[in-house]
Image (cartoon, rainbow, N blue to C red; front, side):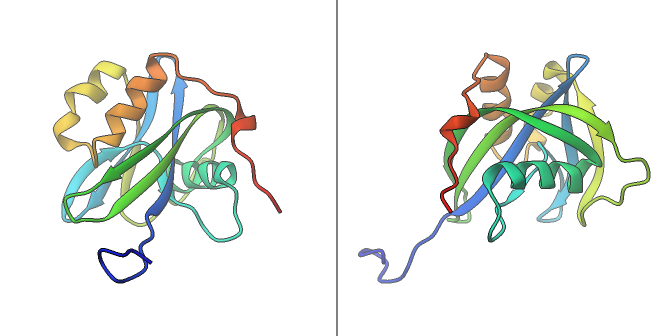
Length: 153
C-alpha cells in the first residue's frame, strides 16, 4: 500500500519488441486516445505468461509476424501525463515469418517497417517517449543476454 495515497499502487507492466529487417524497424500505427500514433509492437503482460512469451504474443497479435526473441534491450519506467505508471521491458527479436491474412488486434491500423530516420521524424506521433528511447538504445547496441530475465515457477 502506498503511504502517500492510502491505497495499493501497481504499475502497468508492458513489453515491447524491436525487430529489424533490411535496416527497418517493425512498428505499428494504432488508434489510442482518439489519435493515430506510432509504437513498437507492445502490450501488457498477461497472467501466467513470461515476459518473453508476452513479447512474442504481442508482436504476432499486433503485426502478424512471428519472431524469435534474441536479447533484452532494457527495462524502462515512465509516468504518463494521466498519472499512470508504466514499467516496460524491451526485447530485440528476429523476424521469422509473416502470417498472411492475420487479423490484427483491435485499434491497430497497420504494421509498417520504418527506417530509424523515419521513426525519429515521426516522434510527435509516438505513443510515448518510450518508443524512441527503446529504439535509440537498441540502435546504439544495447543487447543484454536473455538470462537476465528469469521466470521462477
